[in-house]
Image (cartoon, rainbow over the protein chains, first blue to last red):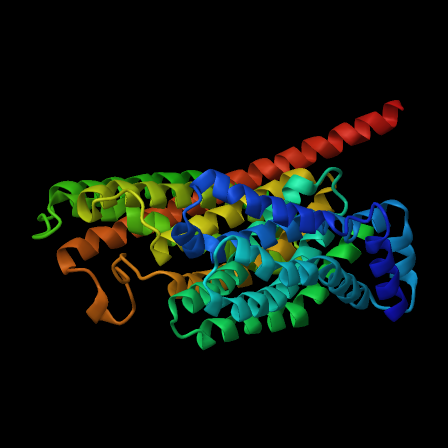
Length: 218
Length: 244
């Protein structure tokens, strides 16, 4: 499982792996927003939590179809399925690798982009924390969605249609926590709810993903 | 009699053929009585005026929009556990009916909302969660239509339905954290104190019964056409094998 994890990391980081693409996308989305809504610092600061969360969410969505599709096409997913490692483990390690190559870099760069959007200073810690925790949930949900659509050719659009509604609770609690931090309100409840969602997806969705993979490999 | 007998499509078709007209006729009668009673023979609400009468369409359709998803969930579970083929097809058949109910609920709500709240749409938790339910329905239908092999499609959509139910429920409670509500409380509940006044209550119950029977009839009808389509597909495949 650890070997598989390292393999996925290396594949993602090497040329053509899409590492960095998600980051660049995130940067571009955030840079485009002031062009669309105007450069007033006050307005940007108020909508910054939402923009950063939406940007991170869409950037994480971009690389989802890579989680299983390439391995499915060249047959290595079948080999993995016959290996002693259960498919649940495969799904878990692939989701973690996806998070480490997209979710984590996105959350690390988010405070910098928050600075560009005049995000009020008291919200930086929570922006970073919610994104680190929240993108983990996004990766697990995404791995499930990728497993669902692995057999569909050009399933990218379908994947977004399936996965985005599942992202709703994570987005609500993540963005709401940062928004409350901006307003100086109490943030513990929503942050704990976000952690709860991440823990739940961590515990349950690898099983659902493995189940759908088994159906698709039949 | 048990539902397992009806895993045999032939038996299912034979039983539902005589039932179907009864369902449609009784739902038509119930809805006609309920709507005429509701529209013409109930008093106007002292605050809402005549707009209150949209309740006879809004509440039943909203109820059925949620119950359709619940029925799909149960049917999906039955398919996953026992490979009950008609059950998988019934889940597939219920989804578009559920979509229609969701749209009716959203539209009637918007029409009522304009004179009462002064807006067609507000990002109220209840309204928003209905919109999210609509998105879940869309994803479910899209997945069905994207996969060619019928058994794989049934399996995958069943898993999606189960996972989606959990997330739909989560979203329902998550939106409460995100915005305060404008929508009134439940119109109907088992503890009597919350219910709407009796004059509105009786035609509403009739209308709900009409909607339930209409839903059953539509789902049976669509399941039957799914079975026929599956049969036609199989016949064509056999024909091709014989030729080629």
